[in-house]
Image 1 (cartoon, protein in one colour):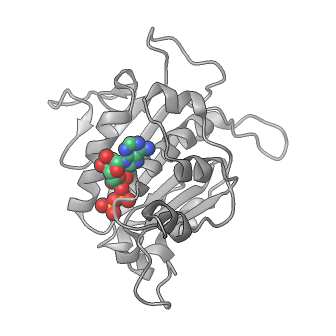
Image 2 (cartoon, helix red, strand yellow; image 1 turned 180 degrees about the vertical axis):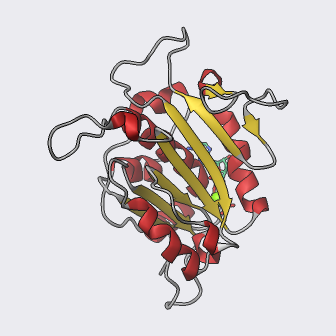
Length: 230
Ligand SMILES: Nc1ncnc2c1ncn2[C@@H]1O[C@H](COP(=O)(O)OP(=O)(O)OP(=O)(O)O)[C@@H](O)[C@H]1O
Ligand SMILES: [Mg+2]
């Protein structure tokens, strides 16, 4: 008899490979990956495409994959072809997007981010700017958050050269707005409902100098084989 876990494993398709997940980051957030999630985290890939069934754990996996990418990006300086350190030219220092078809779908990811991002990483706004009246640090209407990677004692973390992180959630309904940035990491959720025009705008954001340019693209298998996510 086929178990649902086996069915889920079969439906999970991982393309290419990426650096392994930062285990220390996972532990800090009390996340214990399912076996398939663990395997997918460890797979070395730049882009990971996940086709899974409903409620398989795609989005939770993706939040933790994003957190690992943030830690990796934060530890990666930008050294140009002449060996000069250009890290200071990156603004924001680390840039992350989560993209989904609708606000309602993004809201689920947003709410889970609040459960798993260490609270001492949340800052009021871009360093050097005032946080405004919303003092929580989570910008609810625009759905973005600034993080500053540091220890619970406020000290700099070893090896971190890009501590400031800008994480934005964006809907895919206006593809024209999904461009002109260089991303360290892109998470597309419910990819089967994201139009190809949006993907075509997003793809170049992953090829920016000095940026990690990694992605996780997750959803249920599209109905049509002609879909860009097939
Ligand atoms: N590693 C895990 N440990 C414990 N529970 C988990 C884990 N991963 C996922 N879950 C649980 O499974 C539920 C579904 O997870 P998630 O929302 O990530 O799935 P999904 O595949 O994105 O679902 P959907 O198809 O609705 O988008 C979560 O609410 C969570 O309770
Ligand atoms: Mg989901």
